[in-house]
Image (cartoon, rainbow, N blue to C red; front, side):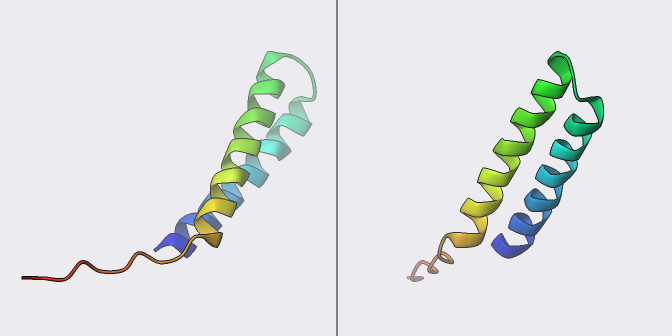
Length: 58
């Protein structure tokens, strides 16, 4: 599941940066760039962390 979340966040980050590039000026463009960077950081985090180990039952 973490890989899927990472890929989705990677796509969202690229889309946000692309929209910021299209807008190119103003506060909304800066917001789009910021959200894109945040999404890319979350994508890297999801793609690089280890899978959680299941807790023992009992």
